[in-house]
Image 1 (tube, rainbow, N blue to C red):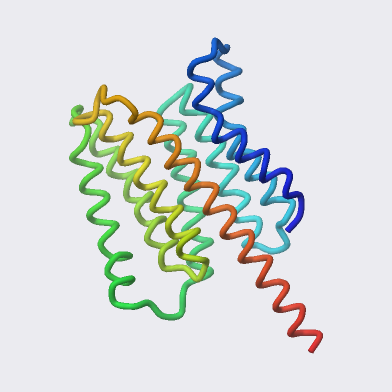
Image 2 (cartoon, one colour):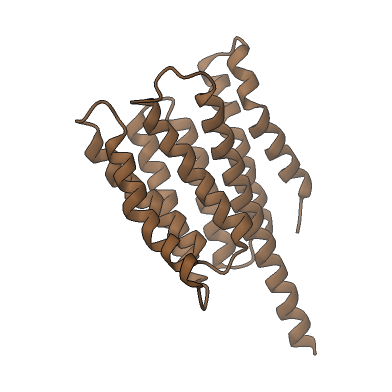
Length: 220
């Protein structure tokens, strides 16, 4: 892998972002700090991209960074950016489907979509917002199911996607039963960013290992 220093900077920016909540920053400064972590993950992925899959994971991270920034300006536009990222991720994972799944793995991949979407629909107190949230959640849960079913490392990429799903479900819960609960905001951010970092690291390293194996096999 190339430019590990970018990965380190990404982790530093993303994990330190909650400190900015206690620092007097301009709106622009807060947006830059918020988007920096995943944007640097996108740049790191781009420096390692050697194939369509490499550029797809780059696009996933870039759309995530865009969503981070846009959420500060418009919830709808931010959600659309993330939804585009989920659709891009689904394409990546379907291109890399696992050949076979155990029964439990298959059940998890199947059940996460209806269960996650239903929970997301039921959480917000504003019932007028529930249908739009459910549509978004459909893309989110499909992404998590596709990640879990892909041949990428399950305890990096699959679990990272599940962390992203949990983060967004907490966002929806904060619109209803979890409103005002201390620590929810920090949990949301850490699940989201750590999940994104796990996905980026898992995909990029798996693609690098695959290239190395194919190169060695070709030489032999």
